[in-house]
Image (spheres, rainbow, N blue to C red):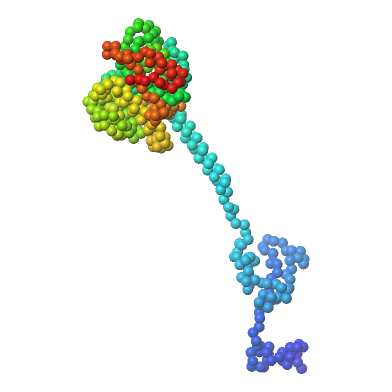
Length: 424
């Protein structure tokens, strides 16, 4: 009797190897069935699902080539085992890193740069403003002429040796005199019709008017006495010099600027020297000048010798004032250039050297000072006029001004008209 279930007898199993067949022929290759797993069991700490929920379904089988009866594809043949798409690996389909917002970055960079520039500019302004020596009080000047159009600066070069060592005075050929005197005096007018730079020879014959002492406050009555112009400064300083010039010209001076020997040389050195075209050979033992004709760059020591040279020139004081105008205009042109203004390694030393040695009036501001330099630059650039005060002759050893020309010149300056008067 056969105990095998129906269909599983040796006769019904056929002649296939591996099914109890007695045949020596091997059974053909069989395809392994694959199982699709259902929902995984709950993890630790999780509650079991309700009855019937999440119960694994009966596995469906595929034929090993990814084709089951229900159309299921396991993904083994395509490499999509983990649910990735397009053959990508784990993590495919997650959102990528957002692109940078360049507009926002540029905006904040610009804000940062502007803030730094503003803070630096404001800081520089207050630093420079604090270094100005506002020692001259023009409110002490009495009986002043009425103000005209434009702005008038009195620029004074003094022979002050304040702060200089004995070695520096020797190197600069300044001598060892005490106190200070005016070595050069110029009026710079700025307005809508260009700038005019007028040198006042220190030997000019002028009358000392009634004035109030700058220190004593005492009134000194005018006696009609005539002196050389530089004597007014020596007698009672900047306030009397302004009072004397205003009295003898009728022109109101709005601002006062003074620089001494040492400060002048320091400024020139700070800008790296000044190029100038020297019109003739100059050799002067008193000033230390020793130059050949032609273009050359002068350092501080050489520049001071050049503007102080007097006795080696044919016209003496009048020729010296022309050299002073020429050099100061060249200096202003070099200071007011992008290579100096935009270069902090040049700008700050130049400002430091200049502001430490300048003496100005109490109402003088940095913008006034900047306007003065730009006006002087325009003179050297050909947009302005430079001249000496018109002279008609001599009174003893003093130079007498041409009264008619001076009167016309002052009227043109007051009305801010183009200057047509010629000087010496």
